[in-house]
Length: 214
Image 1 (cartoon, helix red, strand yellow):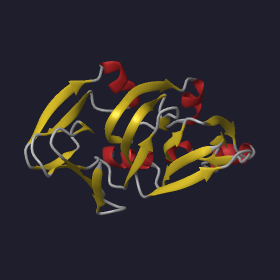
Image 2 (cartoon, one colour; image 1 turned 90 degrees about the horizontal axis):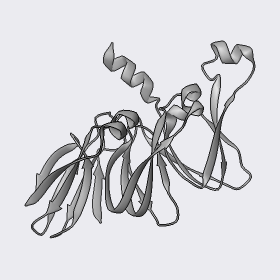
Image 3 (cartoon, one colour; image 1 turned 60 degrees about the vertical axis):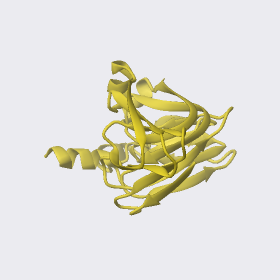
C-alpha cells in the first residue's frame, strides 16, 4: 500500500493512497482529510479493550470507492509516525496509545502485563498484532529503531517504548542502588533480550500527558 509521511518528526501526518476496493483502518478521531470517494464504516472494538489499552472505543474502516483516493491521518500527540510491516509467524507488540492505523489481515489482541505493568508503568495492557499487513504507529518525539542481537541485553525506560517484535522477551528490574531508585528518576528499568527489532520514542509521553492536564 502506498503512503507518504509528512511534517516529520515533530508533527507528522500520514497520507495513505487507496485504489478502488482497498481498505485501511484508522483510530477514531485521527482523520485529518479525505480525497476522492471513500466510504467510512465505524466499528466497535469493545469497552474492555479500549479502556485497558487507553484507546478510543471505536475504529474507522476507510474503503476506497474511486481511483486515486487518499486518507490523511494524524495522532493526537505531537511526534513522529512510522510504518512497520507485520508478517505471519511473527507478532508485533505495541505500547499503549501508539496505534494509529493498519491495513491487511491483522488481528489485534491485548497482552496482559500483570505485575510488570504495575511496577514499571507504561500501561497494564499492550496490543499484540498478528497476521499479514502493516501498521502505522505514532510517538511522542522522534522514533528511533534498534536491532537487538542474540545474547545482547538492552536496557531502557519502558515509557519510551513504541513497539517491538514478539521474539523479544523483557523484564522489569531495579537499576542502580537505593539512591538511584529514590532520587535518580531511573529506579526501575525495562531489560530486553532475544533477537528482534524495537522502536523507541525520544520523549516520555507521561510528561506530555501531565502537562496537558495542568
